[in-house]
Image (cartoon, rainbow, N blue to C red; front, side, top):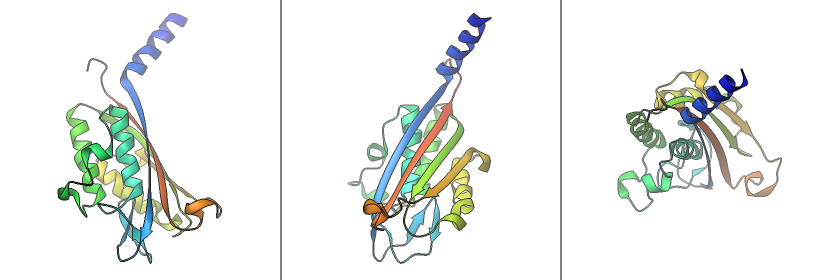
Length: 175
């Protein structure tokens, strides 16, 4: 019986891949705040080559990491003008399309946004919907949480926003 259970575990390991991503951007004047794929009213946006959406950027890195396909900087270098001011959800769609072409399937993603401002509680569901739409998955496959640092550090002083993401992918083990 133990042998059968161990054999099943080995099969699962061959099929599942987890990746993590982390991104942080400073606040900037005169740019909109895109976060989790939605526009949030705020006095500052996030600095970046694209729209600066740290949540989506962290998610892209998590997906790429799970698939062993590099990182966001390799796919969308800040020297490439094609991606300047691009919506990060378009970048996410581009990456996810390539991963699906390699037969990767999404089990779930989990994001945590760390910000002193703005308050994000009322935006969690719209962000989950935007991310699920970009990944062509069910909203139940997208978890999104928001927290603060209780005033500690640059994020606590509202100098920017940090996001972390984890993604679990799978594919048939004959790949």
